[in-house]
Image (cartoon, rainbow, N blue to C red):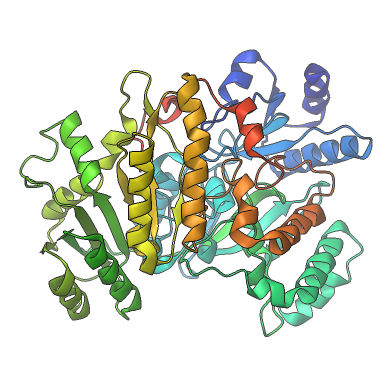
Length: 540
């Protein structure tokens, strides 16, 4: 059947359509622990190819036959959002261009398949950059970053990439193409009057927000970042303006397909000051972070690597941190970066003098490389296998920063109760911590342990008032837990958003919603590897 569909699509598309077993096997995995073989792969050459593909699946769905569409960039998503059983739209082959760079207006227009790192390099040559970028910037795409509403080391100050998206071109489930951005009250009124699917979406979302405004006000968590569900609370503002970008950026292809993005840029200055601080207790470190968050002179980033991480690095290669970190190893190492200045502000120094055991400051690029080498030492741990034991991407949650100590204690308890020794690191200023336990997906006991650990972890994060999806999206991995983050009423609203945009369920089926822990058992991989990114050093 897939061959007939492939032949039909190839007749109507400019891009290539492939259903070979090798291609289907390659696209059956992304950066997650899941595996789903697609029916075929489409390499769209332009927006019209995407529109025709979406229209085709919509017409089939109207007749009761469902073939889902999954947009895919570089396939690095760790939540299972870049795999699907139907059609994979692979953007990196053709739709990977910079369309316009306006240095005066500080904007750049791009296609979704462009490599984020290469885009950033081009911007640097013009004295510009996009401050919000994921750790894997060198091997990820801008479309994937927007779809995940990605964030990274600079997000303490600048937030997620959503803050830099000015407008999007977007293919709806029925193949209709729309442009979205901030609308005035008058512009919204025109959209509400459209006799198209776009008009229907605007009317339905507007009514949904108006009728549930008090409930939606309760959506906001006390976390710095949150990608769980849909950002309904950020769509309509008090002045009547309206913007669908907060819904789409972070929707992971479940509401439509991005074909072009206009992003705002900032002035880039390589001059910076870095601080490497040692803390001997979680309590002191937490209070320091609370004070940093309250400071008017914000750092660009506040990152953490803990003692267990350093122990892992020393175990793998004792010389990697030689002359950089002293023994006995510090309980916590925290790294701060202040851009465009040669020393930290007085307020930061005062906080460090109050709570840190010791700290070093440098504005020398050569010296800073040593700090960065320590901070990024965790990348060695991620890339290392012990036989069939692999560090698995299972956790990506944030809690309010005044609950960081409890978060760390909870992770330590999960490690101990499950006989694990997993390194812990993360974007400390965001209340975000990561732990990748080494398990063997081919071992029945370890597969069972995954479900137990996920349950314990998500109960911990949600119990602390946090979100299970902070620097990336829900995907399939976190979808079963979204209802517990928000409760049944808010969860039901988000399901309605999905139904408004995608009434037949053709867009990235099983991602964000309608995925259960039981479903995991049928799609869990039998092994795990990072083969698709070893050209680069896998990033934390």
